[in-house]
Image (cartoon, rainbow, N blue to C red):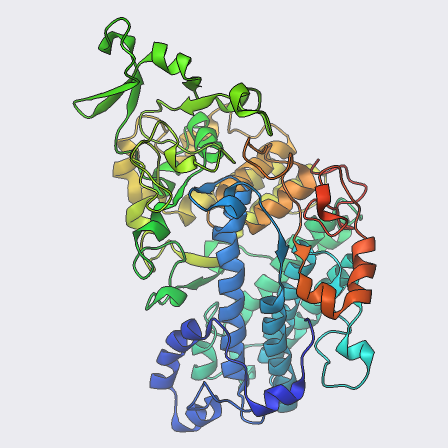
Amino acid sequence: MSDFKLNDYKKYFQVSRYSKILFAFLAFVFLTCSCKKFSELNTDPNNITYADASPDYLMANVLTQTAMDYGNLGSGNSSGAMQQTYQDAFGETYSAYYWGQVDWSVNYGILRDNKLMLDKAKSFGWRFHQGVGLIMRAFNFGMIADFWGDAPDSMALQGDLEGAAYQLPAFDKQETIYDRVIADLKQAIPLLAGTQAEHNEITGVTASSDPFYGGDLSKWIKFAYSLQLRYYMRLSSKRNVQTDVESIAQKVFESNDDDCTMMFPGTDASTSYQKASAFQGPSNFNRNKMCATLVKKLDALKDPRLVIMAEPIVTPSVLDGSKFNPGDTTLTVLINGIRYINPVEATKRKLKEFDINTYAIDRPFGAPVANIWSFFDTSPKYVGIPISYSNADFGYNINGSGTQSNSNNDYVSYMRRDIYDNPNGDLLRQRLASYNEICFDLAEAALKGWNVGGSADQWYQKGINSSFDLWEVSNYQSDINNYGGCVKDVNTYMAQPLVAFDGSLQRIIEQKWIASWQASNESFMDWRRTGYPSIQVGWGSLRAAIPIRFAYANSELSNNMANADSAIKNLEPSAYNGPDGNNSSWSKSWLLQGTGKPW
């Protein structure tokens, strides 16, 4: 449930499922702090009492847990939902939209820790920790409202008080939660004001306990303003937020250096990039392929970022009947490292070249097997799997060697191995907010005619430049030069007719989607409210539309039934609910009701 007993904290401080990454991160703190501060931080993090818990330790716990939870979703299921990556072999939730009920106990666990930090910081008079605590309260409640809708907020986290109202908290409306999110962010900013010297609560231990900004006040303030912008734009389809956006447009992130990120220690599976094979075996990485939706878009735009995202296929394919004798029923033949496909036999077997523009026609959702086409892809270097292809997607592109257990496929692009099959690395970060997101938000605001310090075109170009810099495109120039399917620099890229700003919201959101690589949560939120990028389900999808929320979990439905039922009644059912009832991943929360989006 979303509740907790404070007495439980007085017995033992909760050690979360992310405790290993916290301990790895704090190892540096223990080695570098003074004896006095070491005692404040506690020597046994597995057995911390309520009375002894230090705001520094609690802050590190909250920040690392939040980064891992939000970051893993952004490079995981949200990346699948937004059709950037694809998981074959047991990847139904990821790529076929088999979304069921989702438990929020991790989210409320983080908020419990955060409440404890805030309470302790207030008792010590530590303004920095209070400011950070308010920002993280806003961030985590915002995430709950984003993905679930109505949820316990004002009455949550008070289970130590007597009475059913605290033990079984009412659900606040989604709109009300967003109001408090913005209020918390505003309240945090004056607590973080002043110079570093004026905040004597920020010690070396404090800085070391902050994996985002190392105790830098100015960056935390920019983060608070940037989150305000995020939520104002989220609400822009429901409210007039022009004045709000204009008032903060000059106070948000100013460069990639302001991004809110966390590096991976990479010491074991729980402290590493989630898709790496190092601690979980080869199949943990191998099942992560590129999705055809993103690959085809990047191909069309001649986008050099594809080289940084994707691994080239091992074996290219060519459709060539001259390699086969008349009447030959052989489907493929390998000659000098190239696989040739027999066009006559392919047609007999209902195999054709994949075309994303006719995907929904060639392989429509829910059609009988006898009526659908299967595909091969003769793209010379990068091949993605079409979304929701089938439950045998490990065999895509006429792959006879792959199995559900090993996910081997020489004819499909994995994510680029030398970058993503690693426990950590400079490009592998948990990313909570980025400058390129801000640029595209301001481009959208400028497109509405709002005064945000630049034109839509200017902010749009800044967003693309930021993304190219973020993914260190220039450091991979040799690989880019060797790939004939892309342009070689950002200026040439932005000058292309399909990339140059055309005055449309679609172009802004599509570039924002590309820039959200490995951090796709905001892309999912943008798609819900705008319908961009234009994406569709595939034949193997659970329903005929992409889901738009997390359904409440049985634990909440059974333990807090009356309040959960009230929240479910506030949802708007859709034609895609199926047997779910109103508590469906296809029901619309307040934010989408009346907007006609995304479908």
